[in-house]
Image (cartoon, rainbow, N blue to C red; front, side):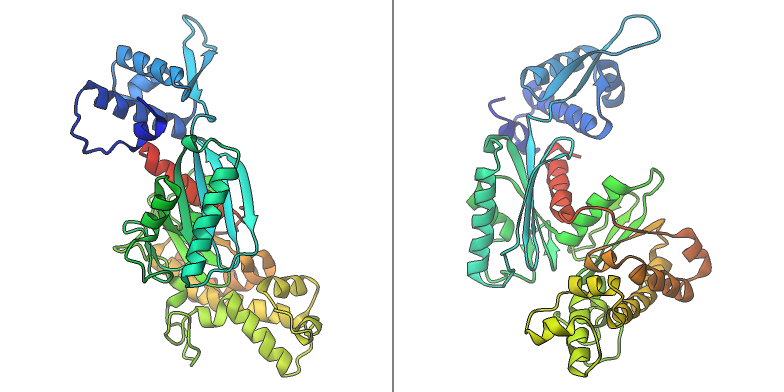
Length: 409
């Protein structure tokens, strides 16, 4: 093995099918097993991977010499010969995760155990469907990889997630930068020189939520993201659900209302037109123009932008208009969630995004409305919980996904 990159990125259909190739496959399986199950003895690896003791012993020793696995010494046992226990050397391999949001970019580096090593946020960024913005994205990622303090030869994968319709198989966004003949994944791989996975941001966050905050018995979960837009991530039998073209989860574009409001997708009456963060911002401005009293009027009069975070903060400061707008959104989206749980019958619905930070102001009407419009047996089977994950969770989730992709999980 000449490099970690060659070791992990060797194509599975490589013409070489000899002992060296097979040993590399077994090594990747050893790493994948330790990544999921933690520290292991040689006998555990032999049993779980169905490989002979001499072969496991030889290959684990090679991984130790390559600084991918660490010999942690003897493990205590009730009696008899004490076996050595082995674990991953997290400083050997890293992965980068980048979330391209509407008004910021988030960057981080993770190790083999999904621990965040370095993180950074660019709040000056604005996502626009223009060539200059694509160049800005590429330059930002390139700068981060070069200045993060990690040897770039040890960064074996780059996960990038973006809002909107994304197909991980084609590596394309079907909302932004669609005029390029190359996919965004191809553009980034050519520019950065690292293997890239391109993913939807809500699905990436759903994956992090599921893996870092789940209960042991959860295998069917819906993640409801209520930010400036509305979307869901779906986990079925412990696996992310993508649909045929990778577009599953566009919950915000269900034609739920009989209104004349044109959605960002070009159609009328979408769920997002009434209950998204953008919808709340627009409603707040209209109410102020109509003379309704609110503590946000001063900000509006100064011609400053009112963000959904301002509305949440005002609600927590007992602003009646803000409370009413959030509760109305909670009631409407609860009715839509009833449709979801009647369809999927999940164990848990996790609620995240900016609006989730409103706490009980959004959750109480949401759950009450869901209860009202869903089947009672289904509602009783479903747990609801607010996300407790950090704001960089999308970047973290896509770093986990590229890590799984590289090591073969």
